Length: 571
Image (cartoon, rainbow, N blue to C red; front, side, top):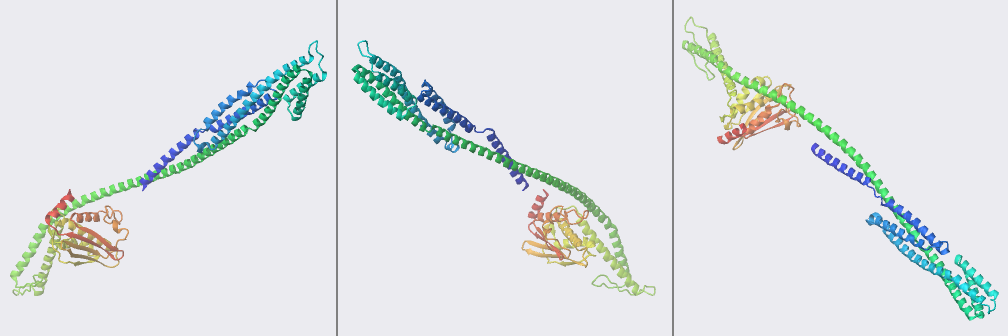
């Protein structure tokens, strides 16, 4: 679980760092198109306003050169191409900018067409205005005539003067009332000139034609100015500016969102780093705990090795002692037997079923009393019985301490249980009564020494479990045939029992519930390994306050199978 958390934390930190770097890169490379668009549009709006002013000045006659009216067209075209380049891109990013730009383009085309017409109209007016004084002078000259002609009619000259002045005024400030006056004057001049002479009428027609052109073009110019002011180029630029401002606002919101995401990622990165630090600290704490557990296990193993060495040395010592005791024991036993035999030759007795019980009669007046002779026979029998007990104990200890752990033989499990109980009698006899419930099971092919070690360990554990009981306990040794090819051995005590939470761990190495220095935690683990090596199983059932029963199931299979299992365990 800790390893998985560390992996998840590492992946999370890597993802957050990548996201943070990406967000920072996007913030460091802002989109400058909205600001460039606004700057270009502001310049375009200024050029368009100056252009409209120049056109009005041209129409009002304040600007004598109409070439200045054509100059802004190139500048506006350059700005338009710049804006068009900035407007290129994903429609989702540029919004309505493309449609607004198309509307401006359409308005600009209309305005350019009108300006071109104004230029043409202005050219015609300029040409007629230049010819108008010439035609007026020709008419004056015709009216003055030569020496043979009468002097001109003064009213005609005055009318010509007034009409020229009114036409000039109309060019500057056209009005419908002034146009009506000029039309009347033109009709009067045509009539007066016609009465004067055909040449004067022709000259008057030429002058009036130029005036009519000027008046007509001036009227057309007025209409074109109205049409020009109606072209929505300024509104189209305003719309483009609003779209650019909206695009800039969207970009500002996007950058604000990026900053918020950076703050969130930074906060999550801080949390992930804190989590990583916590996991690292927890990992080091777990390592320290594992190190302490390994050190403790090492100490326990060393203690167990020392204990095993002591037990091995003690086993060798016991083997030596039992061998040395056998000689004086046999000597004492032989002495007792010799005494008994010599007394039997001196007296007549008979043997009872329980042993030799001699009923002696006096051999003479010097013989011992019958009660003393009977007492001596009883003491000799008790001594021989005690010697037999000592002999059996020494033989059992000698067999148990023999270094033949790998040697297999056919053994009687019930005899092995009796031997283990005899060795542990000093532990059990003051604590509990031993009950043997044997089922006459068949012999099995196994290691007698190893199984006796298992039985002795379990009996000693049972004695320790019953040691603190207020009443005398009960130790039951039970054997049964489990199946056709297996036997069942039970060692049951009436001790304190094993708690349910501890019961699954009792066969683990180094696990013990005893106080420090009183147990190594290896006894049941060794028993488990020995039984498993023999192809059997060992388990326990327990009830706190009632007692514990250890159950051993052993197969009695062929010799080759058992030897193969022991060889594998040794390897």
